[in-house]
Image 1 (cartoon, one colour):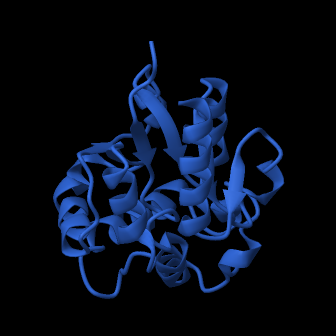
Image 2 (spheres, rainbow, N blue to C red):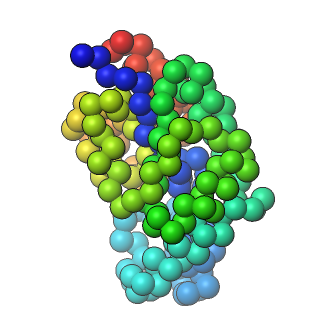
Image 3 (cartoon, one colour):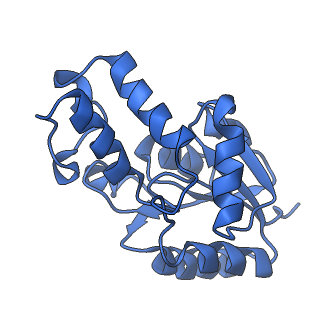
Length: 190
């Protein structure tokens, strides 16, 4: 049985540049935090703050994202709308607490970012079922799990995922390149 056109799309560092806003918050905790181009691994923060301080900074950004300062990437709306027009069911999936659902929904709607479902949890892999065919995320661990399931897996290239780009998924400089890749790969397998 052929897979349905179900795409799982991340928010942070996929639909908008989350790391810059996070960096602003982290500098308030410790002015010595390195710039984002030096974040080459996932635990970069451990020498600069506690885990609870780091998580609080993330939550602060998520709960305060719904304003004009927190803009999506210029091509984010076109990316999602084209997937939707091509018949994909879009689930926006973010590593966020359920308590941030309302501000997240407001942000998505404010910026006209089309989607069918919003999944907030700390395990996106629960969505990689038989109806899923595409995963777009910046986290190497998420993309590796998607690739293991045989899903089309891609993300935006950042310092923290650069070393993983040979792990079976593809990383690009922008969402337009991801869109071309996804649509091309899907057409190959349809």
